Amino acid sequence: MKKILYILFHRSVLVGASLLSQVVFLILMVNFFSEHAVGMYWFFIGLSVAAALAIICSRMEPGYKIAWLLLILPFPVFGGVFYLLVGGGSVPKRTKKRMQWMIRKTEAVLQEDFKADDLLPLGGDAASQATYLEQRAHCPSYTNTETEYFSLGDKAFPRMLEELEKAEKYIFLEYFIIQPGVFWDSILSILERKATQGVEVRVIYDDMGCMFTLPRDYHETLVKKGIQCRVFNRFLPVMSLRLNNRDHRKFLIIDGKVGFTGGINLADEYINVKERFGHWKDSAIMLEGDAVWSMTVMFLTMWDHAAGWDEDFSFFRPPASQVRPWTGYVQPYTDTPLDREAVGQAVYLNMIAKAKKYIYITTPYLVIDVATNTALCNAAKSGVDVRIITPHIPDKRYVFEVTRAHYPPLLEAGVQIYEYTPGFIHAKNFIVDDRFATVGTVNLDYRSLFLHFEDGVWLCEAPCIRDIRADFEDTLKVSQPVSLRQFKHLNIVLQLYRSILRVFAPLM
Picture 1 (cartoon, one colour):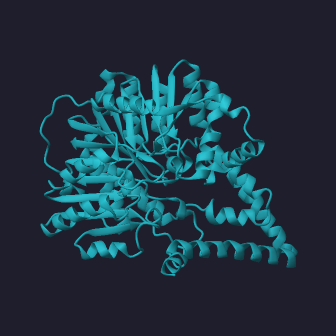
Picture 2 (picture 1 turned 90 degrees about the vertical axis):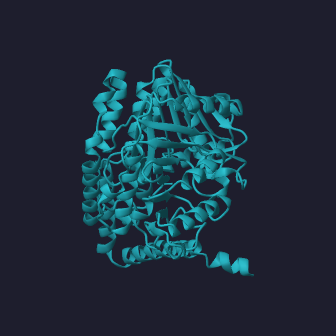
Picture 3 (picture 1 turned 180 degrees about the vertical axis):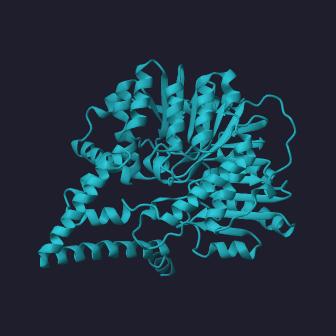
C-alpha cells in the first residue's frame, strides 16, 4: 500500500496529471467557444493560420516545421493555441537580456585566452574550428592541458574520487541526473567532509533530470550539509516552452585545475554497479591544466544565471599551471538553446566536413536532422570511412525505433552502422582522421542539438585521441553490423510506426 501511495503521489504523477488536465481543459474550452460563438471559431482558425505562417517564416530547423505543421493543420481550431503555448513562445525579454549579459561577461573574462590563430600551422581545418568556437561560443582553445580519456564510467569513478580528495579551494558539480547510491554517496561523503574543512562546494542539478531520482526538496538536504545548491529550471505543472530547455551538462571541477565532463551522470548504472539495459558503456574525459579555467567560467555563468548572482569570477582563477610538454589543443565548449547558435551541431558538422579518411561516432540516439544526415551521407559517398555505433539494448523503446528509422538512408549511402550488443552505449564521441575528436554531452538528437544546455571538449592532435580511437575499435568488436537487407522485409505496421515516429521526432 505504501508503495502504491508513493507512486500515486509522486510529483511526476501529480505534474503529469496537472499538465494532462490543462490540455483537456484547453481542448474543451476551445471547442465550447468554437461551437457557441462563430466569431471565436474563426478567431481560433485565424490563430492557427498565423501560427502556421510563423512556423514557415521562422528560422527553426526544417524538421520542427514539418512536425508542427502536421500537428496544427489537421486540428486548425486547437492546433494554433497549443503551438503558442508550448512550441512557439518567444524567450522572455528578461531572460534574453540576462543571457546576453552572461555571454558578454563570459567573453570579457575569457577574451585574453583567445588564440585560434595559433592553430594555423596545423592547417586551416584546425584553425577554422577553433575560430568558430571562440567567435560564436566564446570558448578559447588551450595548450598546456593534459587530457585523460576514460572508456567506462567504472574507470572514471575512482579517479573522480581521487581528485576530489585533493580539493583545497572549491568544488563545482553540474549534472543532469543525480541519484543516491554507491556513486553519488561516495562523492557526497567527500563533499561533506571538504565543506567542513572550508572548501567551497557548489552543486547544480536539473529538476527534470532528477524528477525520479531525488525528492523535490533535496537541495535543502545539501544546504544542511554545508553544500551550496541550485536546482535548474524547476519543473512546474504549467504548459510552457521553458519545459524543453534542460541543463544536460556534466561538470566536475576542482580548484580550477582539474575538470571532468562526458556522458556520465552521478547514478549507479553509469558505473555498472546497478544493471539497467545490460552493460552501460559510457565515456568521460579529464582535463588538467589551463583549459579547466574555461570550464570553470562555464559553471560560474550557469550558477549566476540560476542563483541571480553577479560575482567576480577572477576570485576563482587558479595560479598559472606548470608548463607541460606538448599536449595538443584542448577547447572546452558549451551550447545554449537561447542564442540561436547551435554550437553542438556546428562542431559535429564541421568535423564531418573536414574528414578525409574516417569518421567514427558513438551515440545513444541517432535521431538526426536533415543537415547532419546529408553531411554523413555525402562523406560516405565521397569515400570517407563513416562508422556509427548505437545501442542494441534501448533505454527508451520509442527512441530506439526512431533511431532505427534513420538507418536506411545512411546505409544506402555507405555509412556503416553497428549496435553495441552487451547493452546500452551512452558515450557521445566523434573521432576524425586521428587528428580531431570531441567528447561531451551532446547526443545526436534534436533535444541535445537544439533545446538543451550542453557541453563538450574539442581536441586537436591531443595524445588522448589515440585512446578514444582504440576504445571505438574495441567497442566495434562487441557490436553487430546492421545491414540494409534487415530493412527490406519489415512488417508493414512496424515500417509505418517508424515512419510516423521519424516525422514527429523533433518534438519528442
